[in-house]
Image 1 (tube, one colour):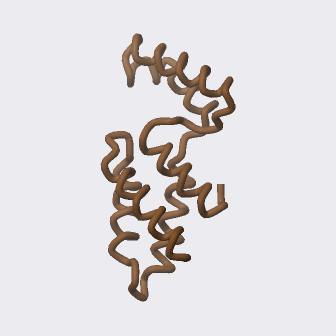
Image 2 (cartoon, rainbow, N blue to C red):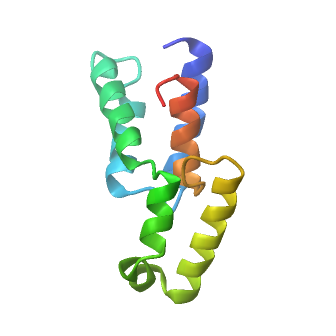
Length: 117
């Protein structure tokens, strides 16, 4: 990976790790990738990390569907679920394709930078 891209991805990975919205699997893949930089495992961990990011990033329609469902209301609470749906519909209307929580935003930035989104 080019130095500029590597530094960008490392920075966004740190943001991802600090995010409360990042799942345990995402954090584990991020940590493993950071630890593998410069080692023989770098290529394999990069592939694993990018696959995890692609699996974890939440498409906006999926977010709207979940937050608006009975399961979403139970998970978030009624008021929060309504707020999430409203916010997600607003950002979708402005062109968003993915959730904009800190974890998804970091994942989207990484995948776009590497042109694999």
